[in-house]
Length: 150
Ligand code: HEC
Image (cartoon, rainbow, N blue to C red; front, side):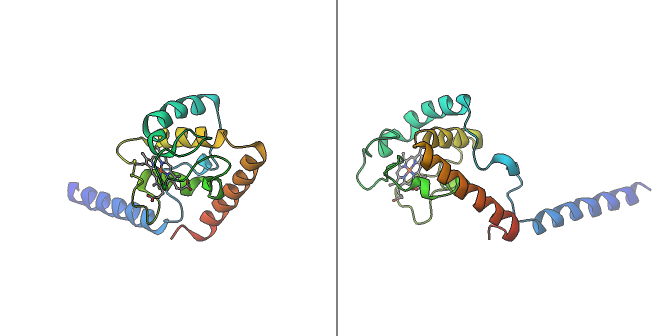
């Protein structure tokens, strides 16, 4: 009987693992509602502190000029807002594709802290830029759910 239960358990775990693999359309560690990132006062003020500690040295002030040559600015004049929240989130955690200078922050910042720092960056944009980038993030999410990220 005990053996049967053990077998049943193995089967269940395998099924769970298989179905997790099959569902690679969304990162299951992230709540689907995470993106677009909702701006809350709490996120923005925590993000401001994280930005000063980890990002300013290269990117400069959030709405100013970068301090390290070749680093893109995050403000309205830059192109950070041309990208959807999910990609920005992945890039801060694991580096943007082809990045040579930008460090990966996985292990340094928690996923929540990355959300917070992005909320701070987003909050610095003009309202119309925030609205456009938000719309892009919504469309990107629809695509992620329909076609997967691969
Ligand atoms: C050591 C310097 C350095 C630090 C520190 C740094 N970055 Fe970057 N970042 C770069 C550079 C340079 C690029 C352009 C890609 C490359 O050449 O590596 C970049 C690219 C990016 C991009 C993609 C380009 C864009 O804006 O669309 C994002 C987003 C970004 N950084 C966010 C951050 C955030 C958030 C932090 C702090 C948590 C941070 N970076 C810390 C140097 C840095």
